[in-house]
Length: 330
Image (cartoon, rainbow, N blue to C red; front, side, top):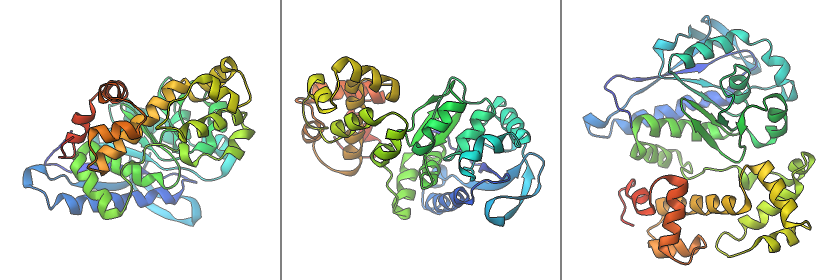
């Protein structure tokens, strides 16, 4: 956790056709500043936001809005945020006109700066070559388009936030708040993130886009069987199951389902279930005073020892250590 008496400087990249929805993220940092002032002096963090562009000056974005920007130089900012862009499926064509922005982002990242994208802003990061071989996410409905143009990226559109240091990407429109809260936690610590989320009446436990993925759109991308399987698994997080049952529900063989699921999700059905059970466990550990035994049962495990082993495998900490982050007893 990073704390400094000097402000955390955040540059928000303004470029033609960037969606101004992301720009509301500056309000998230204003909330964090207000909450930080209520803390002991040694724990206070101040966030400063600036509009930036490769060469500075006035830059227009979507909706006819214009911003006075500072020149983007890597030494001046702790983070540069890349907003999403408009123009639907024209994104790949638009990106060819943003080489100056790509060059500026590459220089900043090469200097060790943290680059964070919101929604379709991950297209700009990928076009700049920053995401090759790295984990990333974007809005789930852009999955097929993104994979078509950037196959070298390890895309996971179930993730709401994907962190592959020093690169960060986030999901769809409303995820700008999740992105801002993640950065607040990164620089100011988990208590400040939680305080800010409460003031914003934001769900600080969101971590996945999976509940919002539309089967109709996913089916058009050839994932109908996988989405059917995933929905079945999500409804049985606290139950035992086997591959034969799952494959029967999906009207396919266990072997075919395993292959398709692994290709689409990057995990086996068993691994996917473990991951989602751990995410449920995290939410319960953070937001309830349920005992570890009760949480274990609600996550589909027969004993605390097994649940703790799986939890640590996916989170690098035990459930008790995770809950202690919030000042609570397991």
